[in-house]
Structure formats: C-alpha cells, structure tokens
Amino acid sequence: MKLLILNGPNLNMLGVREPEIYGTQSYRDLEAYLRAEAEKLGCEIEIFQSNHEGDLVDRIQQAYGRFDGIVINPAAYTHTSIAILDALKAVGLPAVEVHLSDVDAREPFRRISYAGLACKMTYQGHGFAGYRMAMEFLCGAGA
Ligand code: DQA
Image 1 (cartoon, helix red, strand yellow):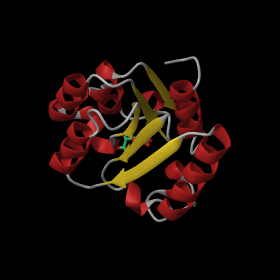
Image 2 (cartoon, protein in one colour; image 1 turned 45 degrees about the vertical axis):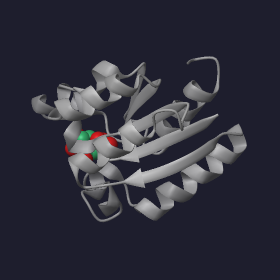
Image 3 (cartoon, helix red, strand yellow; image 1 turned 90 degrees about the horizontal axis):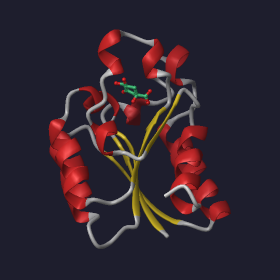
Image 4 (cartoon, protein in one colour; image 1 turned 90 degrees about the vertical axis):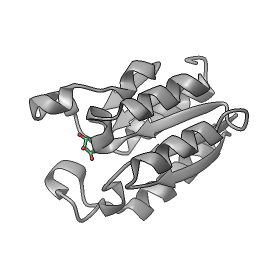
C-alpha cells in the first residue's frame, strides 16, 4: 500500500503559525510523526507540501498509477480550490481529507470543503492523529 500525503499552504509554518490553533509542533515534527506511524501500519508513504495550488494539482495527477491512495490536507485551498477537487476526481484514487483543527467550529467560510467532495472520509480537529486515522482508513478495511 503506497500513500501520497499532501499538505497545502502555510502548513510548513506549523509551530510558528497560530500555535493556539495548530499547536507548537513543527512541520518537521509532523513529517517524523507520519513516517513513524506509516512504518507501524506497514504502509509506504511519500510526503509533499506546497504553498502553490498548481503544484498540488500536479502531484495529484502524478499519483495516478503510482499510488494506492491520497491523504490530503489542502489547508486554505480546501475552501477555494475547484482545481484540487477536479484533480482528485480525475485520478479517482481513494482520498481522505485531514484538518488539524476542527474547521466546522471556526469561521463560517471554513465550513465549505471542495476537496472533501472527492474524499471518502474527513478527520478534523484531531491534530497530528488525524493523519494516522486517515492512513489507517486507507491501509485498512475502510477503503
Ligand atoms: C487547516 C484548516 C484550514 O481552514 C486552514 O486554512 C489551514 C489548516 C487545518 O489543518 O486545520 O491552513 O487545513
């Protein structure tokens, strides 16, 4: 099982950005967490972060035929990007959406998720653990 883990804009600023919402752990900490959890689950992962919508679209397209599933935290693009939604639909790979924070409990504009329309499941408000849940879902019986 090979999973692509995609992270959108400003997630590289974890630890610095709004720690009261996103916590004090850094993006490097998140990467280390993902690798450790993937190893426990016995799934292979590739991790990619970008602040650019088109780069995320490119990586989703390139996943076709190379990965078995996608875990995606599109960050702010969640609420704006039809291009990311269309890319997820185009490749048709099982995808799971993750948000560190509970987006439904925040500003109303965060309640809309375009990417989520192409995802089998969403985990939000669980911090780093949401990514583990997403990997479990895709590596286990959930997908
Ligand atoms: C986020 C939630 C988004 O609304 C926000 O724009 C982010 C991070 C989260 O992980 O909680 O950048 O996706």
